[in-house]
Length: 358
Image (cartoon, rainbow, N blue to C red; front, side, top):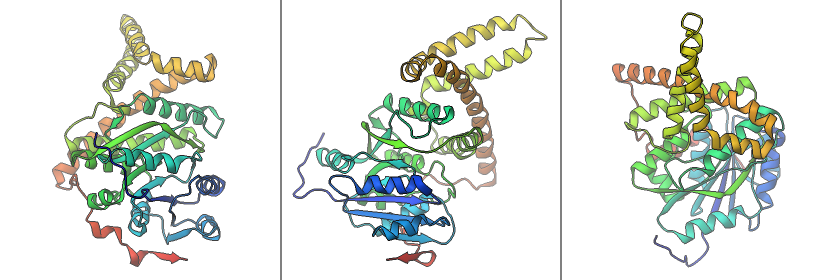
């Protein structure tokens, strides 16, 4: 590790893209404005919002830029980064609140290690919404990040910071993702392929206020994450053994698929129920630490309810992998596959598409 003591504190720009953020966005901004010390810049980008979110930020005296139509958080973050002058770009989602010392923590991470190009945090274990799916999703994310490798392989736009010169040199986020998707993961892949280090700081945690429903969960997991992530894996010709795509996760997907197949076949071949029981036992054992975590955090009833949802997650992840693989093969056959590095640096200056509010 090459530690250094900067001649002056690193400056930090907090960049928040928002599309109709409502009360959660206002809470997010309020938490950023209450940090000690304050960031050197707070830049809000209204991504075609129509609920007055960007006007709220403007009235609060913050630097605000607007797009007339939604175009995705990648485009919005790129614009904010192009306007920032600070050493570090700290991206925060509009539905998270941050701890009071977050700016100090971010500065310290980069000041201690000059080799760290980017860092990410995680959600805490106390999500803002109380319904089961919101609690389950947030706790699952928290667990995965808390058990991930500190030398990370992906970036995370909800709570992630990066050196400004590195971000600009890499060309920023992929703006072809027009809705929240894997634009941050894709950037992380390019960073690591270029030899940059990304650190997962497990103790840096933010509170997530998103309310998940069955529909929003399936849309996000299947269409906005799993399918494009599969295409990304094929483009980069390799699977990174970390976070959601570790070896145990991939084995669990196969076991869940085999278990479902055995159950469906059982009316004609009752003997396959033995195989189903064995696969179910292995699947439970592989993920026992997670289920113990659910039990400790929310009790027996919650853990028992979470297990079938987790197995369902493995099932539709397997389907999404098949769909993503088919899409990749079709794109390659048509010659339309995107290269691994996508964005020219000039894409960070979309002035003709922006109304600046000062």
